[in-house]
Image (cartoon, rainbow, N blue to C red; front, side, top):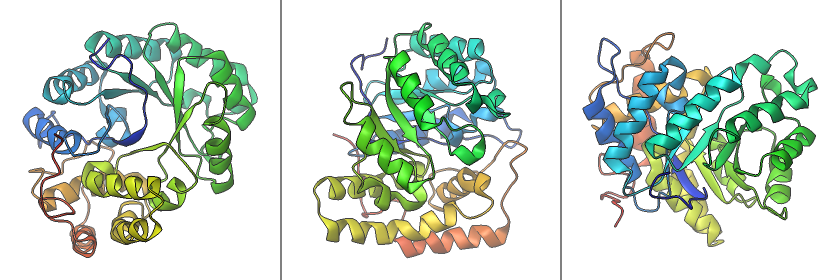
Length: 323
């Protein structure tokens, strides 16, 4: 167990990107600089590694282990690290969970297994068994990643309640339901249960609208670029300062529109290009099947950064280093 053994996820939690060399090998020095830049932003409460944003789908088990290790070396004494658990099989997911705990992670973000896409929601016992298998392998707190129902990987509401009841180590959900009404139901119901479950929104394309429903945090790949703006927005919403929240949201909006434009799968590709434009990464290399963006799209990203007023020192013109 890591330094933050009593960690419970809430607040602003960015998911970091992964830097690669031209030959697709991990660029550890650049990745470490990115981790420090994001993880030590004032107001950030934790950092997620080995998630969507870091192209976990294209990383081997050994690479995921290495990424977590150097992430802990770089910032693990300053901020809790959440490790993604991305696997189609429950036994492999349990192996990743054990690795993460042994290394010193503070929590797990468990993705739904792709193996459940062909009607798995008709067998709720499958989802329960998946999480029980992981929970039996580790004492780390678990964040359940809730996908949209249209993806074939979302847990129906009644199934979600069964999972939460069966696995007490689940302490939060990363809500990507994509349904405003369902998202509000999650927020109102889960955070008011006898054993409260924190709702971490990842509706980054409409973040302010989501936060005002009462989510107790957010977990977002966009935090790899705009962690300081996300902290400012979250704080304004928590303070019920509508005018400040709207002003901050006006700055986030052009980038949200750029990041989450079709095709949706290029969102983290776009974020990586923004870090290059801001001088925070040297290269924006992505592993296939992701592909380099066009020059025209990179120009659009440059325009969105300018419209948002984001420079090399962040959105507020000065470093937002944690104390």
